[in-house]
Image 1 (cartoon, rainbow, N blue to C red):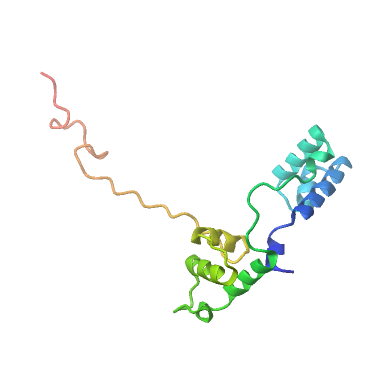
Image 2 (image 1 turned 90 degrees about the vertical axis):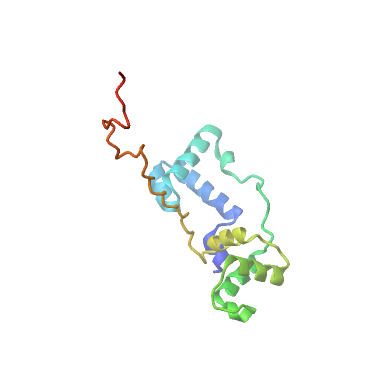
Length: 164
């Protein structure tokens, strides 16, 4: 099975899964068991249950896709995964380290599709080729020592002069 197929289900497969889950829910299977059976969160199973109870089975059928369709076909995505596993040296780069900018360059040269390097990072994550990096938090600047420092003794006369 190709990488992209392992990562995400097609719209038809997702619909089939929802309809099978609906049948199980109608047969009295608990939401937790449905969630485990179909490898979804309990929140998702609960959402399916509510949709089924309020609007019926039709509400779980697929609707028109929102958003822009991918500019790369499934075969091209498989090729992107294959390229990522190859050495960058084989694609004319000076060292053996893939960056998203380099992958964007290769994708554009191979398929004629321009992607921003940030989008390439998301694409590599979706294909299971990279882990998402946590956002870096900058360390807070050390508290400037001043007469208003939290360590200041406020009873000192030069800070809290007494009113005469």
